[in-house]
Amino acid sequence: MRRGYITVFLSLSLTLILSLVFTVIEGARISAIRMKFECVTDIGMNSVLAEYHRELLKQYDLLFVDTSYCGAHPSIANTEGHLRNYMQKNLEPGEGNRMLGSKDFLAMNVELAKILEFSVASDGGGAVLKRQVTDYMNDYPIGAVLDKITGNVGLLQGFGLDSTDVGAMRSGYEAEIEAIGLPEVEVEEGKFEEVPLNNPADAVNSVRGSSVLNLVLEDPSAVSAVKVDLGSYLSHRSGRLQGSGLCAEAVEAGGAANELVFQTYLFEKCGFYGDELDKSLMKYQIEYLLMGQDTDWQNLEQVAKRLLMWREVANVLYILTDSAKMAEAQAMAAVLSAVILMPALMEPVKYLILFAWAYVESLQDVKTLFSGGRVPLWKTAADWKTGISCIKDARGSLKQDEGGTGLNYKEYLQIMLFLQNAEIRTERAMDIMEMDIRQTPGNAAFRMDACFDSFLARTSVSSRFGYSYEMTRCYGFY
Image (cartoon, rainbow, N blue to C red):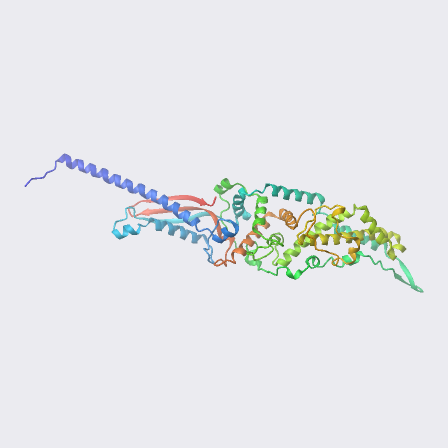
């Protein structure tokens, strides 16, 4: 039998060696805890973003996370719960280690998963939404489109089509006739009666208050009958959810949103009369962006009225420069009995006939646009479609016309949308998105103000071995 022994020197050496080993092991534990904390935070925050809304991406190419998760109670607290869950799952030992009975070397738990800031789609009047749209449209060849839109807007404003009041001009000539008065003839001894003016323009004036759609459409009953409850959509909803606005990282990455780019995006994603989308609830979506009424009929009617106003201004201003048409109107006025008896009535009656003729031409323009044809902003004699006899039967004289030169219906809508208030346009665009997404399975309560695209989170973990760490990070779709 051999005796074993250990020297004092070796005993002291082992103590130092073991201290070093345990220090290295503990240092490795600390480093591993820090590294795993960083990894699970990244995994958790990326996993939150991976829950982006699929229908919103499919229909509108937008990346947002719905804080209701297809439920009826949106809250950022729901997302905090998802973040905590993702982090905790990735901190737990794998199934294989648990089966082998091995101990958790790190023994970590999530202590905090708090979202401090987040950007919802409607923040800043829709700035968050438009930033994403600008990024999406970055490679879209829109330069020529934008130049054309701004050019047409410049022409419209240059011609004064949005500022000239032809109604006041017409009323001035009517007042002039009233001031002159109609001639009287003696029908019996001592009894006089006014000679009726029988102005041909009266037939046109009698339809001025009628529905424009009923005047210009071949089959008004074919217009969409969709009606919605606007109170449930973002532009009319009270108590909207609000985030912290556009985050600095997103601004730096994507730059400021361009309103013209956003408008081009809307025409890519939304339908309008003559180019409706099967997926849409309201069939005339661009018209809704412009007018904001609760029915397709009213939105289309209001657009038709605005088109009619623009065309009437343009046609009145043109016809007053056309000597041939002025002569036709004078000839028609000259044969009226009241004018023969009182020549002073000639000028105001002539001008009322010209205004009536321009109105019928304007109805024809709107009918042409709704038929798929084109109408120039400013006409020449070759572009004029109606004859002076049309004022006797305004509606009956209108014809389907799919030809012509100038702008089509879509290009007139582009001008209108450009002139629209930017914030109103953006809010109504989010209404349209809510309408369409709510038609898909599981999204009956979908809200754009419940959707975020970036968030700042503070997370912390602790270890059973007495360590704890905290970090703050910002993640988003930018």
